[in-house]
Amino acid sequence: MRKQIHDNPIDHGRACSLSHGTWRRVGAKLACAGACVLMAGQLLLPSVALAADWVNVGGTQYNKGAVAGDEAGTWSWDGADDMKLNGYDGAGISAQGNLNIGVTGANTVTADSLQSAIEVKDGNLAITGEGTLNATAEPQKSRSAVKVECGSLAISGDVTLNATAGTDTIAVSGDGKAGGDADIRGANVNVTATNKVPHTIGIHTRAGNITINEGADVHVEAEANGGLNAVAVYAENISSEHGGCIAVDNAKLDAAARNANMLSVALYSFGGKDTYLSITNGADVTLVASDSVEVLDGVWMRAQDGVSRVLVENSSLTVRCGDGTGHSRKHGYGIYSQSGSQSAIPRIDIINSNVEVSGNAAAIYAVNQGDAAPCLSIDGGSVVATPAGGTVRETTGNGLVIGVPGSSVIQDIRTSDEVARSVVISSGDAVEPEPTPQPEPTPAPTPQPGGGSGTAVPSVTPTQASFTAAASKPAAKATAAQKSVGTLAATGDNAATAAAALGIAGATVAAAGIAATKCRKR
Image (cartoon, rainbow, N blue to C red; front, side, top):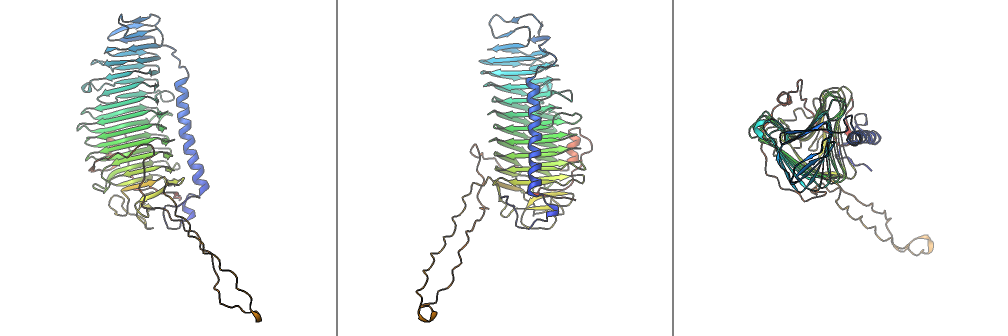
């Protein structure tokens, strides 16, 4: 049976019923799954261009139909869509059309000043194999390590990809209706973006989705070195019908954004339509956002005219965003779901998962700038361990937030001490206490002459078993030991500043918060 995380009775006219919460949760999962299935289908189906028209290796172009390679056998191309690397150490590789790169041994591709290390236009790029591929672009040239234009990227197998560049280290773009996706299956991928440029981004999909699954292990660092913005993982569908979904399924993701002057966000999704973050099936995700910046978020899901949803199910999520003490109490959130739609809700579902979140303004927060009510569900045996007695509090500005026990509306989320800035959610692995044993019934007295009893015997009422949720049990990591993260101090400002920094017009953040198993209705 679903457990409320608060003691206050819920006004059912303003709450998510079990049935409503269930179908909305299922809807979120189906939407995420549908987006990911669509993406997988696009990666598997052949595109219009069945093979590369040409490839360029180290500055020399080879046209379609001509088999090419070097005498040492460090690289070869079949004249169509198949390339092999085995001990290659040289300048950049580019192609027009589909290109599949099979990796054996240790390989290094270094971009020159005019291109990315590996670049494909008007086609899909697939990287697979059992070797290591080091792709590096000069940070000062603002080139990508791996770049796909009007196509999708698939990295699979036991391959290890180490990608380093100044910004958009892995960059994939689609045409708004198809392509633009990055799919990492089972591979080890290490991404570093480091430079003092306006935007320092690790993995970036334009009009596309990002999927990490099948045991993949992905590490992303966005180090701005005093530049304007740092974003580790960014999926967008700003002016497209496709994209805006980030999914981590049975995989590991560590993402950090650091040392920016205006904005640091670990996972960011922005779209004109629906945006989703899905962490499922034993995924282990650790996010860090640190600095004294205008905007400091661990997860920011933002939809202008659609649903913004976060789903964490049967998984582990740790978010360190600031020190969780309200140092700045401005725009600094651990998990933030924001929608500007008049009808589509921002929603966060945490199901049978261990979640630890800190944020300077609030740990977990949902807001709708229209009339639709935000909603948060904590279900599947998960319970709030910190703060003790943590409850759902309404805020001004059409919002919900997890806070300390109470029922009044919080007027200012950034300054109120009733807002929880550190939240621990346990997957319900606490052991329920044993029921109080029932006393042995006293044998009935021997009837006495005259209808009386020899000794007066009191009536016995069986004692009901008592079940108390463990409110102070810390959350345990689902698939890995906890990692110690140093105290992170930060300051913040409003979301409009962040939107301007990213070139996104019209962003206004209304004060709001999150509900657990609760949905405000107007």
